[in-house]
Image (tube, rainbow, N blue to C red; front, side, top):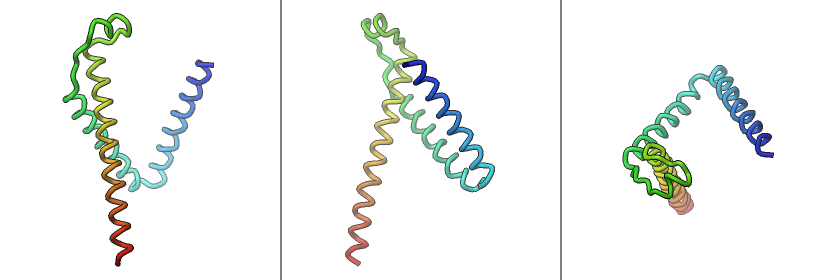
Length: 105
């Protein structure tokens, strides 16, 4: 079952990349927003990676094979997740306040 799932993930990834390339070819101006978004996510990951701790306990090293470099990468992804959650939360609050203000006027 697991190899089949891996094949489906690869197919979905390839289809996504092909779809993105087709959309860039059809409307290059729309691709700028996507590329800026990917750049911002890259910057947020770099900030998260830079602020992540690389400490590894003996249990993590022996049981999971996690070294300091991998630990820092995992911490960077976790920090990126926290940043994106915070951005989403601010966007939701902003949208609620915006709708409330529009309903008053």
